[in-house]
Each structure stands twice: as structure tokens, then as C-alpha cells.
Amino acid sequence: MPSERDLSASPPPPGSVPLIRGARVHGRSGLVDVYVRDGKVSALVPAGTGGAADSGTGRSADSGAGRAIDSGAGGAIDSLDARGGLVSRAFTEPHYHPDKAYSRSLAPAGARDGFERARLIKAGFTVEDVTERATRALRLAASGGVTRLRANVDVDSVSGLRGLYGVLAARERVAHLMDVEIVAFPQEGLARDPGTRDLLAEALRSGASLIGGWPNVEDGAEAQRASVRETFDLAERFGVGVDIHADCAIDPAETMLEYIAEETVRRGYQGRVVASHCCGLEVYDDTDAARVVAAVAEADVRIVVVPLNLVDGGPRGLSRPLELTAAGALVAAGSDNMNDGWYALGTLDPLDRARMTFLGAGFEDEGAVDLAWEMVSGRAAAVLGGRDGDIEVGADADLVLFDAPDRGTVLAGLPGTRTTFRRGRLVGRRVTDARLGNRTAHPAARGAAG
Ligand SMILES: [Zn+2]
Image 1 (tube, rainbow, N blue to C red):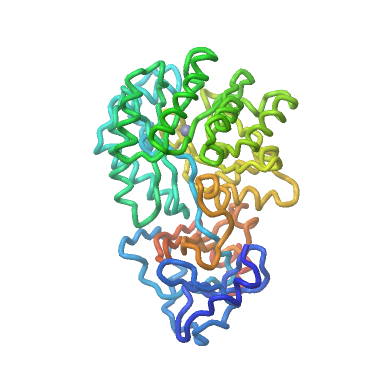
Image 2: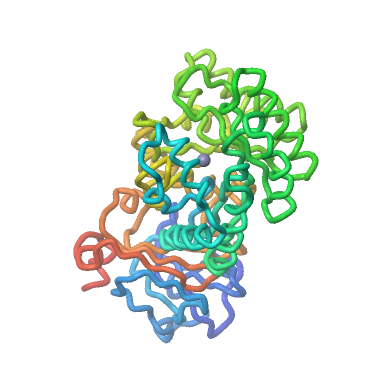
């Protein structure tokens, strides 16, 4: 959170107009004006004390707008009156599969499970249809305030590199909305689908910047460990980080996370490995769990839990985010799937991820709201190797403004407005219920309405 020094540093030049006037910043009393220059936050000053004493000279945005805005040319506003609403850094989506987006209806009937359903769907992928579906999904995420997203994209003998090429094209289309980095993900396994190996190497030469994996899909413990080693071999060969699916079932027999932590240390890959799901950990006995949690923290393996999904009718589980965090591990929450062979629902809304993590993992102690928030915000960015923390002078002006005054009110899911800025440009607005959100529900809005 900003320090007192931040507020007095970098005074805005005389005559400049704040991008956002009269906002609340988490952990700070009073209202602030947010100044942006060259796409970065240039100053945070107590409201009304900056370069433009008559800060009303800026053209205000129409706060009653009721539709999402996706303006590649940048939003046509100079200044927006926050009316006491919370301004936060924008959100990060650390784990999503955009090649599969909106593909549920493409599934033939009769699939035995999600794995088979997803395979049958992707057999029909074309670069063009992946591009269209992924673009739609990435735009949806952007409308919820996501400006950075890590995409897992299937690379295997079923769909070849068609998913990768489609998501690369989608990334171009949303470049004004978000940063997208791509994990080459061997959903079908390495030993089980040997043709995948060459395709993964090709993917890493063609735009993927991380190597993925799913060791648990292989047959038997040794094949699973070999899959982990092979993933690290590829990572070392291409000089890239690892982002690996681990222990996706709530089953104590799923034990790859500990081996991944050990391999991370053996390879000197501390801080360059993300492991997602990690649901076996949830049901280990507490002694085993404590050992694995300590190994993960020691190896600086970052964890992404995925609270929204189901596997074959059962809960997917949430790992142990509180214990991992207490041990010093970086833990974030991701969406994983939406409207695809694996999961019929989903919203790509970071607030849903935070809310479901809060509920599912039993967050209740002091600081729980902040932890849930940070797991889709600062911690999610840090898991991906970015900056932790909240809005800050000198950081990119990727911001989300709410009409609610604090994180708890926003996470409670009350009606309200969410306005997203990317490098200081207005790129989206989502209104849950304009009538209630702007007039009745929030104290901040009530004052403004009067
Ligand atoms: Zn996944």
C-alpha cells in the first residue's frame, strides 16, 4: 500500500488534471486524486491538492453508463469523479485455458468424462475458431478488470499447434486490453502422447514463453516423476519458466507437488515454477501436508488454486491456501476453465475467484478479505513474477475503480460499477445494477448523489 511518502512525492505539474478524483485507496484514510503520465501512476495526492485546483475542469465520464467499453483508441475522458469509491490496481488472471473458451456446445454426446469431452472438442479446433472464442473470453476477463493473464494452451497430437496459433492471434486482438503470456500445456501427457514432445519444442519457438505439464496423467509413479523431470529438461533447454498442473484430484494418492518442489531445488529453479491445483495436499494427513507445505515454501514454488471448478461431478478442492501463505509461499487464485469440456459454467471474474476462495478455504480471520483480494491482485501478479502490492506511484496505471468504498463491500457482491483503466486509458465499465448501484447500495454513491 502507498506510504505517506508516496502521497507527497511526485507532485503533479501545475495545471495537470487527475485521471481519477476523490478515490479511496485501501489502507489509507481520506480521498486521493490519481495522476497518470505516460501510462504510469505519476502522483497520488490528497484530493483537491494537486496541480489543478479546479479539478472539475476535466470532462467527467458518464458514471451512469451501463455497458462495457472496449475502446482500442482509448477512453475519451480526461478525469473521472470517483465519488469516494475504491481505486485498486487491476487484476491478474494467473491460470486460464482460452483455447477451450465457449466450446462446451461443440461437445459430441456421450463423452465419459471431462477429459474425453475436452479431447473430442479440441479435435475439431481450427485456428480461426480458437481465435474467435479466445478473443471473446479475453475481452470478458478485461471487462472484469483483468489486465494481465497467463494462458495455458493445449499442445498435443490431437490439436497440434492450432490452439497456440489461435490464442496468439487473440492476444494480438486484445493487446490494448491486457498482457497475455502463454504456457505450452501437454494436456494429453508426454509418455501417453509421444508426439507432444516435438510439438512443445515447436510451441516454445513459436510464441509460448513457459513450459507446462500434467504429470499425474501418466501411468504410474515413476512415469509421473519422469514427466516432471522432462518438463524441467525442456524448461532448461529453452531457458523458460515452468507452470505445471499438479495433483488436480482431491486424492491423497496425488503426490506430484512434493516432487516438483524437490526438482525445483535440484535444478536451481527457485522462483521460476508455478504449480496449479495442488488438491492432493488438501487431503494429506496433517503431518504429510506440513512437510509438503514447507518444501513448497522452501523451493519458492508458487501456487495457483482454482476454486471454481468441478471434476466429474465432485469438488475440485482448494489445496491449503492459508497454510501455504502462512509458511511464506506465494499463493494466487485462478479461473482454470469456463464453458468448455471440463467445466460448463465460469465467468472469468476475478471477484468470483476471490469470493469462492474465501468461502471454500474457510477464510474468516482478520485479514481474510485482504488475502482473498490479493490472491487475484498483487499476489497473483507476484506469482507470475510481477510486482506485488496495490496502486503505487511509478507503476503502470492499470487500475480498477469501484463505486463501493472498500474491498469488503466490493467482494460482498453488491450491485455496483467497475471501471477499468489500462495504462491510464478507460477500457471497460461493468455495471451490475445501475439503478441500485449508483443510487442506493453504497455509502460513497449516496453522498455523490446528494
Ligand atoms: Zn488448468
